[in-house]
Length: 306
Ligand code: PBG
Image (tube, rainbow, N blue to C red; front, side, top):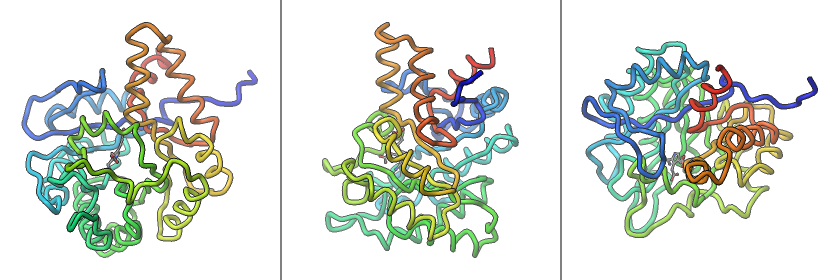
């Protein structure tokens, strides 16, 4: 009766990894219980997600060809574009969010154009805008840039507006930290930076809380409609600070490493899975997030609807 915080399936977004080919539903080694799907296998999956009352999905594409400028990320028939179309076709009520980044599509694995040992921020912006437009054309309801280039929200907004997608909102990964907790995702999405590089030039220093608020403020000024803090568990203070300061819908991403470490302990019997999963989600909501992107969305929704 006096419970302050509730997590409902309608507060959750489920991430989907999509590959080319047909008939594929391939387990991801580092993320037990999570699969890579070919577009034809998505229909059954997203119908189930919709029936569970989950708010939406966020789609990540894993192409079979990569190049220096990530062309497969903004091809009209790219894997993410086809996956978005398949999701909307099978589950029209589910919100289809398209992640926009180049790291899955570049052969060097960086989130932007990479030359002379550096990521070229400004050269990357038109490519991100092209990716956003092609995903909106495929049917994406929301565009979610995760690349962390400066100025990308404005560039994507302008690109969408110029192409007739002025009503497609932007969910900005505004405060995204250079985190060790993305490890399993990079295996899942084959997006680990080559040559031993990392993303510390464009993702944020985990030590900086105030900087997150500046990053969010800039993205909102550029036209972001919704904002995200990522990862979640090690950044609950940032979620709380963002909640207090900004009115925009606030998302938090419980990332792959958070999922995998809980799953590993649950598999060994070291943690009570039901309780640990619920507690981790409640903590993120209590900190102030409106919605949570989580690989536990289906597990959790199944349990509370039982
Ligand atoms: C793409 C992207 C990443 C994640 C979401 N979008 C990886 C990264 O920045 O390295 C991580 C999600 C997760 O770990 O679950 N840039």
